[in-house]
Length: 151
Image (tube, rainbow, N blue to C red; front, side, top):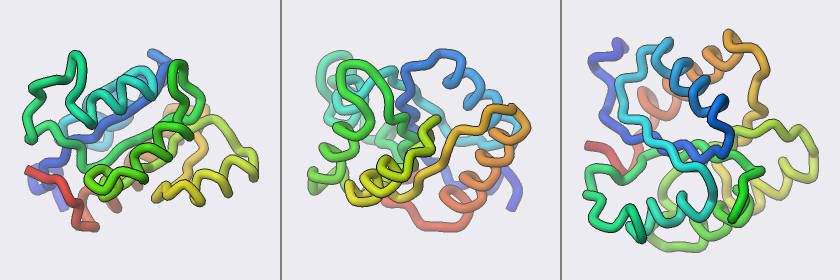
């Protein structure tokens, strides 16, 4: 499927590391993912974005993410807490959450799936490897499966 045929899906990435956000943006552009990419820097902002609170009050339904990329280790509210809140909310739990983190701990992996994550991916260090991860995410989450929120 060519990039021009992609379903229009907002991808929301929650990650406190500015370098990781930039690398993810570049990697998604490299795989020609035409979808909208939004960023938040911590779990509190993630929940505010999803619930349209604070600076996200008035955000239109066209900005509802179809996919969340979630880092675990963030300030204010970490990814584990945010994931629990998302998957406990009847409206938000339909949004697929892919945990994209530096952790490789078996306890994290088990706990994240118990909390309802759809996937757990350890962030690659090399940019080429990150591009490959983003290509797989694009192929599966954007081009293959049907997502609950798409334009």
